Length: 365
Image (cartoon, rainbow, N blue to C red; front, side, top):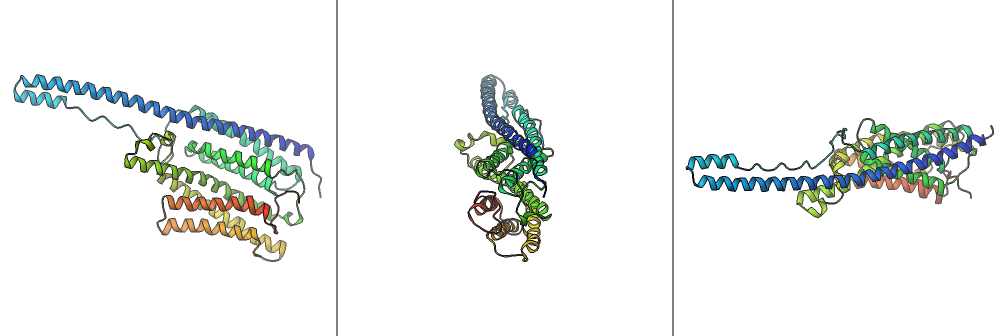
């Protein structure tokens, strides 16, 4: 067994810390962008309201003058004046400021753009930290909860940036990077694990396929969780618009930069479908093959295996219900959120508090 490169392991920890700080800065800038966008929208709408009020007042005074002049003239002349002076209804301001296909519309958002640039820098530092940890230990860098969470956080950020090259999902920045920072903090505070060799059961080529697919699926489920939460909030706002509830419409102006609840639901559904394929191939199929190789059986009702199957059933039910049973809107969003809650329970509770063959959290006994 090759020795561990401690110098490279220290560089890995240093760059992991650097990446966490940059992620935090990017998260804060995305939050500032959200606040400033809300304030800008309120200011622009107030200016438009003042302009419309002034225009209505001007047109109204002009109409009164024209009517007075028409009273002293002929009826036909009065008809012409009245027709020429009839005020046109002021155009209502555009209610949404985002394309339903999440295309870039050229809206100036400097804070969000800087946050994206910082996110790219953070992902580069994070990728070096993860890769150097694997090279230092001469194995794949996702053999315990610390490595799983840090690798998962890297993929969440990377998938976010990858989608960002095609779709304007900057509105997800605060939520996505908030989850990334939470995962990094959870790994550092809850599962601090120094670089070390792994247990014999994990010394298999299957770990690279099994865990990498699981991490990919979880990264997609994390982004769809954020989209589903936004969907619920956006749906509440749209209901307020439909009923004319001005108290609800005046709040959360940032949602004007977020696609409609229907669009969020559609995109979350597509990403959940891809994540479901990864989850089926990773934790279930390759996990069963690896279990047969390591323990001589494909399925043993280990607590981790049971919860992996529960997660699969929840997301399968979500996809089936939405595709064939017409479960759309809030019901579909809540089912997807329940699936993500099961994932969090699986990795945050089952891995730590339920002893079993999959107890690889890396925590001291």
